[in-house]
Image (cartoon, rainbow, N blue to C red; front, top):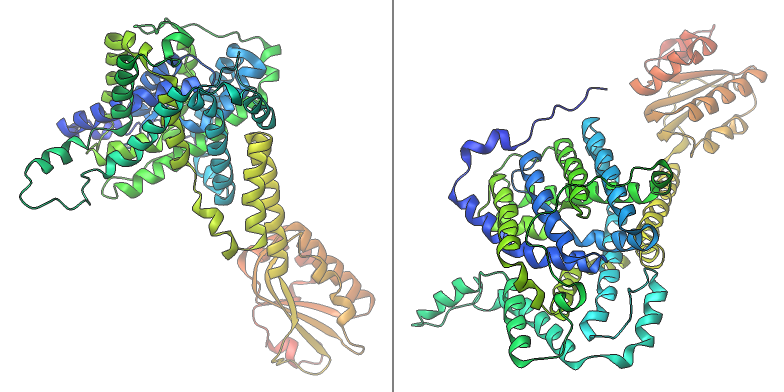
Length: 554
């Protein structure tokens, strides 16, 4: 297998970088700041873990990636996964599994396996994405309502509901008011004097207000509501009251424990992080390709290698898993970013804020961050797909709803595994039903010769339709001809069924002839030795060959 050549997109685009990329990077950095802290807190980590990930992973994905505009960093899709790993294996387990997942992602890109991620059915992606969105929303109800719950919420879905219901009476009206105002700002801000909103005639200031509306909604909500809560002295929990101070500098790299006994217990979490990171990053890159069709399409293998390096470096600094982030990538494209410079500037923007304004983040109410994450969960889910289910087959509905329910009730790994098994089983069933064996309607052959046409793919899921073919041969038949010009694929199980048919016909002194065989089935027939068993004269290029049709020796 040829290895993928390590060639970051930044090497080809550095001459094209300009001030518009700097402006886009500043915009994305401002958007990433509250999201990075919110994702870390929701994952059961300290806010600085999200900031460090946005800085390190964001810079490395931009520098080494295979996309012009993709922004890397902590993502909402990892919240549920990270929370469960931390609860079961602790912070050390998370860091080690992230490091190993980074190595696995790098190897996937090195061995050109990026294309395999596209083979994950869209039903599974929609199912687990909607399930993760539900779990994110559920995990934020505690801070949205200001519930007084000691310790951390459990990772299990039903256990979370039980704990939330037990402490429902301890809700804080001030926290709920902040959370609802945050949601209101996030929904209304882009629509207030937006580009599609008609401007009143003669109102020049409307244009200025429209330009103000381009300030990211999360920043508006974060700043305005934090100031409001501080001025009014509302008794709500803040980042500082729960986590203490936020470091105003990057931590020194530290190697996590690499004990073999720990690594053996983290195989499943490692695979989960790697699979989810690969899917999310390549889906995000495809979205970016559609948003900026004038740019070269992304290189999936190079992108996976960059994601691997980012996930190997992030845990060394105490960070969390990273992947491509759709919201920040879309913001980057719409802000004018066209080269990886924008992603690098985004990382340095987060770093500058962390170094200069870390003490100010201590006053951010957790209810405001909960509102931001609820908005993220709403945008993350593809809820319209549930309304469209009635238009699709039972198999489609089963895989999508099954993956969704399993993600919510159990975990992402179980959901993807069972979803893939269901998708494969339904695919095998569907391909088996499409395969047909039918008597040839216009038989140009003489009496005593029966002809059948095989249509579709003869594989292990369809061999039953060939095994009973010998029973359909009428008495007095001296030859059976199989027209294979519509047989597109043959596997070893299908070949064995043809061999069994040949032997059954031989016992009745009936010849088997194969006509018009396509390239792939013919290659397998020759390589397996079945051509020699059958006789080269019994594999003919056309159905109406003269040796079949009329010669006495046939």
